Length: 553
Image 1 (cartoon, rainbow, N blue to C red):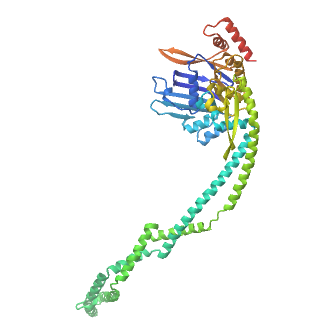
Image 2 (cartoon, rainbow, N blue to C red):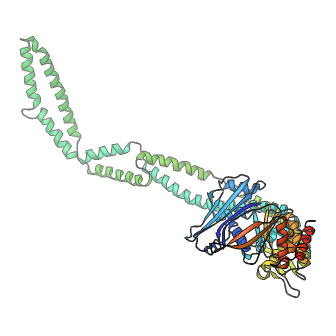
Image 3 (spheres, rainbow, N blue to C red):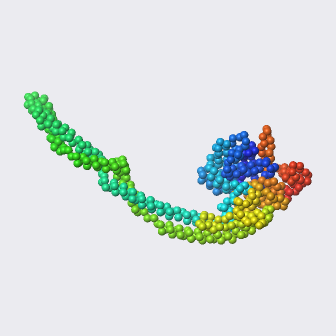
């Protein structure tokens, strides 16, 4: 329930704080004192439109803060937790609006979205009397009202669960179609890629070998001339190095027979000769194998180009390309091996559709049977609430396709005057009539889910004995839910558990709204003022005392 409401810089309200109690809270005061502004502020807490026109003149910002006791509202707590917001026994909602357009919503101190605010506040408080916040006008709420009266809320939830399961299976089948088409396209692509790589017959390390081979083929002339020249210098030509080294080695070996200290040098020269001779023969053999081969060079270039094209598509190295092929081959195997059990899904869909038809028919039957009973009950209540001859018609319409709520929609048709055909509530009912109609609903329906109800204009167009009956009915509702009601009728105000007087006062040349929580004596004088006007007489006080005494019995 709503425990505290703080308003700052809204219209003629400077700063205001209300502490609210369970039961029936009545707000009274002269016309223009600011009572409806309080309703506007509550509308902001419910997610209503934040207009800069609401901001008090001379100020740049306005705020509304509300504290709710949610200790018995597990659904609200779960919604907060799902939104990663702190959840406890209290909920603080703050709405700020600014002339600069920087409007903000805070829930438990955290910035929140308007959608989250509407979701949470809609399950905590409802306003009756203003078309823009009138839950009675929405078709989905009208169907929920019929289900509440018919006792079919549980059956509706069962239908909704089957509907969701049926929708999920239909979505799976649709996804299956899309997946199969996508899988076929993917299969074609991967098959082409795998075959292209396989056709190249790549080998790990092949690039290095090819590059080395290409380098040799491209430099065949230089390799041949250099190696041939080196052979001639070492061995083949006149004055070759090996010939001279042979003469030197022979001479040193001869003199080593004289001076034995030269034996190691002679031996070293002999070994050098033999090593250089081996090198010369190697150069001769190498030179004989070198020959220009343009065809082989072109073949190497083509192979390198082929590998580079594959690298641009599949990887930066041959190893990467081969690894990619392994990956797509594994995916190909998986795609070719997939078997979707379409028949199983289609069988499940048929079973759920049969359940929908059966459960929907049961729901339709109960709704149709109870619509007439609800009509009778509502019209009886409406006639008591100064709407003599009013017609309230819960009109059921069969839908071409079912929704999560069933196979039908409902629209409440209303005629306030005899002889006039019933028309949709939204097109014909006034704010006061809507408030009284909602009060009528509250009399005939089980306890509602929303803990706080706000009634505005509920007393419009009524008086006399009807006024007392409206007050009694509001008190009946307040025994189950917290009720806030603005009224100009003393007969209604006398039923309050908490009575607040709203009045305008002037401080330092500016008008502002002030709210006073009335004690018993002040309540008596306020009721007397409402009875007699500004001049309160003894008879008016006596009448007020008697009225309060009677209403509390």
